[in-house]
Image (cartoon, helix red, strand yellow):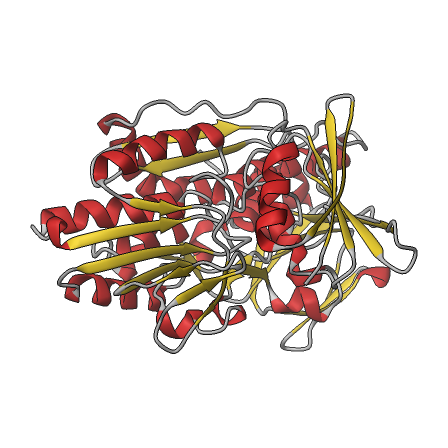
Length: 86
Length: 376
């Protein structure tokens, strides 16, 4: 479930992955799949109700070499924003 | 009301039969019509391919004539869709025939696409088509020992396959008496051994007991000319037998008609309507929903949608939402299994595997045909 928005960089696009309330394949797997579909510099915002997303998404992003933009919690939902770097 | 169903896999077939039973009177009087378009006159039991890949299910056991599975009131054409003209409520087929509809259901499924990773198709085997499962069986039975690598692409159909293929191969080599000559190396894209955390923790204990090496955060980027796997994270994996769960794509016809990126159609998670369309529905692997691409997902979506399409005709309104329900068996070897069941509001809590669930899975391999007919 992807929704198109404008990224923090006005030239970049931001897509939203609404993975709230989903367990399998889960927010990080959705992010990995979606990352293949976007251009370098574009952003993805993952909405997740899994607290683990706040740590496992940054772990993968840092290991691969993409960029973390921000992680915020709004109620029960974590908003994790990343940018494709390569 | 004319319902057109594009796709004769599990989702499309269960939907057609379930809806036909609910609208029996309307179908006989001509007030309702159900038409199905499929690319094949055969229906495959796709989960059976796992057993074919280890020599436990012959290919002819996987198929039934599609027409034999459908309620007699359903009009069935082996004539795949080519053009979706959603603005004019029409679908044009390969033969050139044009089908109008009041309600359209798209259930074209997904396919393994190993060709999207350089070298993966050439250097690995998988169990996602009959041809590939037979090739995997040939390689597995000729294997005399060495390192078996398991690599997993995203997205992929049947989220339990990475674990199941590892467990059943382990038991197969054990039965052949060569387990001490085989070293398994299981890899997985995220930071644990399975998407479902409790399943991942259980697999961690099982793999440790079985001596299976693991690497997580492992996303294949290419397989080189020597058969060595390279990853986005900078890892490498060498093996003598490489088993892959290739990344999947939706069907080409979906991309050709600009219905969704990578062949997956933007879909509302509750109503199963295609986003922006009021009379087009999407079920099974064809949706872009962040839920399991699995037969059971298609099954439960089809049941909810059939109830709603019938209700539209009888009450003028849908009667319920799809709740995200998924049920997956997990084969934990040759004679033990467990299952995971969850929905949008309830996480899975799988139990320890046992023989009873394995034998129920064996029974389900035959009961599937009753399920496809909409009876189970």
